[in-house]
Image (cartoon, rainbow, N blue to C red):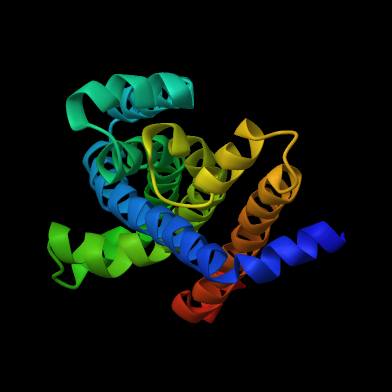
Length: 216
């Protein structure tokens, strides 16, 4: 424990920087994935075949091992941020696409018919009725993707990506040296703590952005 605490104190600035980069990369990836996934969900949710194809394609991406996907992206995008963010966005798509389709498809047709009856066009119905009602489901997909990406990003150190994975890889590669185990443990522990913090933030966002009627 003394070695662990000493490592944290001596490397606190590096740990803060790596933690910020880790969270920043995950949040940016989830935002980008949400834009893409919601657009796909809107395009296919009325078609059972389209929904199945979109979900199957995203599921296929998720079955590719992280090392393999990064290995495929490195020759195209090089090392660093570009392959890392691309991989994270691809991995984040499935939960958000699936939940967008579920959320939009579960909107009561009577509500949308009533909205059209008062003069709303298709775009207004989608923006003012369907998406707000589907938002809790979409947010759940984002929440799942965020937790998943927090762990996947650690592997991106293989591609010189940002975040706490570099700390873990560095510790594991120096097993036997005094700081190796504390380094790997601190990196892993910070990822778990930050994942829990982000999950709590999603809960707060959900309460602030979802109407009480939907929550109840």
